[in-house]
Image 1 (cartoon, helix red, strand yellow):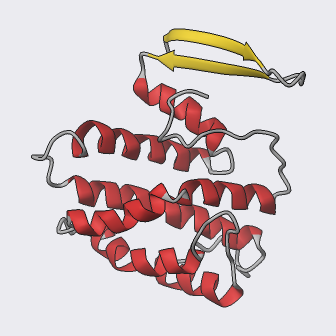
Image 2 (image 1 turned 180 degrees about the horizontal axis):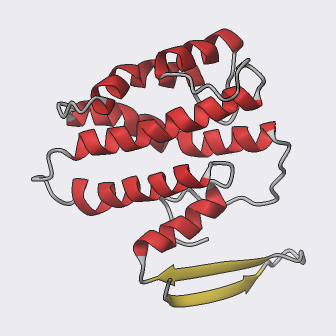
Length: 193
C-alpha cells in the first residue's frame, strides 16, 4: 500500500496526446519501485525489486553512514545478482543458450557474451568488458567474503552510473520486439515518473 504525498498532471505542450504524471510518495521503496517499473520495464520484476532494495541501502546507509562498512559487499552481491540474472535472460532471448533452462555461471556467461558478440548499442562500453571487470567481485561477494573495498565498489558504480541497468532493460525490450514511446531521466536524477 502506498500513500501519495502529491501528484501533478501536465499535458504535453507539442499537441500530442501525452500527459506527464509526477508523483511523490511517503513510501520511498514503493516510490522507487513504481519509477523503476517504468524506467526499467525490460527487467524482470525480481530484478526491479532487487534494484530498489540495493539503491535504498546505498542511499540510506552506505552514502550516509561511514560506520556501515559491510555495505560494499552487500551492495556488490545485490547488484551483481541482478546483472547475472538479466544477462542470462539476454543470452536466452538471443538464442545463444542451447538449453534455455540452464543458468550460466558468471564465467561461462561472460565468455558466451564475448564469443557471440552480444552487445548493447546504448552503452558507451562493451558488455563483455563490464562482465570481465566485475567477475572477480562476483565470486568474492557471492561466497560470503566481506572484503569488498570501497575502491572495488567504485568499479561497479562506474558501470551503474553509465546506465548498465537501463542498457540491459533496453536490450531485452529490443530482443522481445517491445517498442516504447517513452523517454525519461535517469532514476538517479528524479524520484518521479
